[in-house]
Length: 222
Image (cartoon, rainbow, N blue to C red):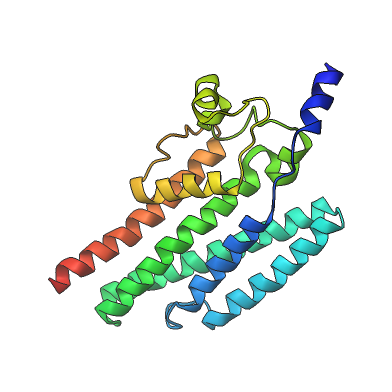
């Protein structure tokens, strides 16, 4: 049993962290384009704070301080989530108060929709299977909050991978989050954990709200 585990580890490569760091910066960058009347403070402030925390995350990861790295990661995602929810609330208020132009409302809704995809992809990536560090400690993703097709024998065969060695990367969670925001469901990836079901429902609700605002404004313009 030990020899099999050692063999699996010898061919397993740790999960790269840079896609998640880029996604966090991209979410902060989208917020820069948010009108300041709908933003939580100056729109550039969020990106500045996220950038500093991303640098701290890189340092803690390189030094092997996984506990602090996890705290920093959760802080970044919580900050992005709170800013997004605040802007969504301000957007809904502006819609009913007729205090903003249709073009500004459409742009803001589109920015929130894109941020929603990135933020929840980060949450799924951070929480599933103990996070990236937890997945690196146990090669082969056999148990998690989501049942990716590659985790099944049929899905692994179709993808041409070894199911005992396959582990999700950030792009897999990004794909899951994108599908949830567009189709309002996870499509090809069943959800197993209760916390994941709650997050998926929240993401779908935010996406449905922003899409409803977009459609409503388009109808009014036409």
